[in-house]
Image 1 (cartoon, rainbow, N blue to C red):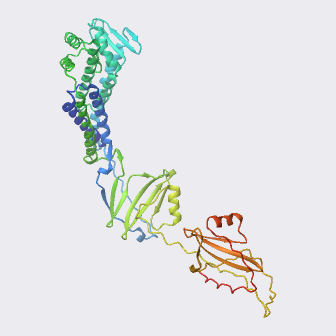
Image 2 (image 1 turned 60 degrees about the vertical axis):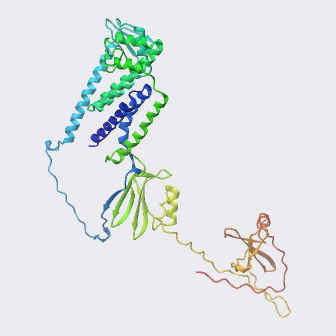
Image 3 (image 1 turned 90 degrees about the vertical axis):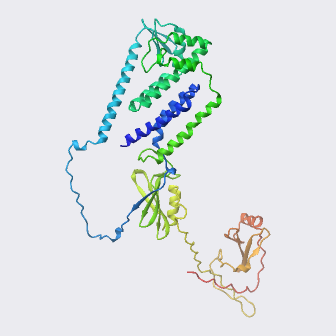
Length: 508
């Protein structure tokens, strides 16, 4: 019965808007504002029931029993047989909703047929003798005193008095598209034919149209009294159809003359129209809180809480989108006293991909950020494990130089050419500070009468950079001197080198 609830709510709001018009605005002479208010009321009354502000709704708690399917046997299969229900007779399927729908459609069709007949009657009148003035058509009706307008057509009887005044009045209706307002209300009547307020609202709107046209016509004649006298003298002229703007309308004569001579409303009276804003806000709150519905546009996230086995789960029931355009749904739950989260992405082709916040590898975290543009909410991920320490292999040193008692070098077996010697990291006590504030440690060595020097620079962020004098390029030497404030020292050859440093312990 969603359609019935929607119609009932829309017509309720329409009644509230029209009641506010009768109380606050109907006596004001701001006719254009009144016209806008009535048209806006019709639109707002049908839009507000479709809007739901989820922030105003309390969270919905759903209790769900969770079963452990891992305990079920996997070697047996269970067949579930659902009995076939007998076919229901046609008469028993007819419900009260069906009768309401049939009655509503029948009434709407009747009102629609009446509207079509009226339009057809006007269409037949357009075939009479007429004259064209720019975008407007004046149709002359023989031997009648009628005068009315419909869109760009002005119908005037050949025996009507005061034709110039009538044309001036009706041209206001044509230029300001008053017939479009009337047709809009006719469509509202088709949908809400059962609501008497719709008919009252249409009459009020047509009355405002006449006030506007009378005000413009009297201003053109520059004599309000003479124009009022003309209305009074021609009060019994023949009117047109109900969907047209008829100049001769006896029922509105008294109101038109009173409003024509009434003192104009001041600018402060315009502030009264701001009442529309809190009225719309109140009806929006009522639409969200007072009416239970499954349709409409939801503004904001829907708050749904699911209670499962004593633990509370916050479930985003609506489908969200990541920064990279992927649709997803997110579930936050508590397991063993620890907050966790699960996310499911809806990819092209109906594919669903789910991830859990714990356990989660760094590769999965990078995939979520890089591909999907998503991060789990705070508090749902455990702290990352400490980074593993790098393994340090064996460090090889060149063999020592051997000499006899007389200081003569002993012959040695040829050694492979050593381009670079790896040293273990020296103790912290050997750190020095350069002129630019960088800490460094240096070591010199001699291999086959080839002297070399190594320096390790400690960056401010803890990174270590290693440079060798024998392999350093000009750019490296320039960087060491200008940035780090370090210059390789000159080395001297000694007859006997000091004993080599001890080997670093092997870390497995």
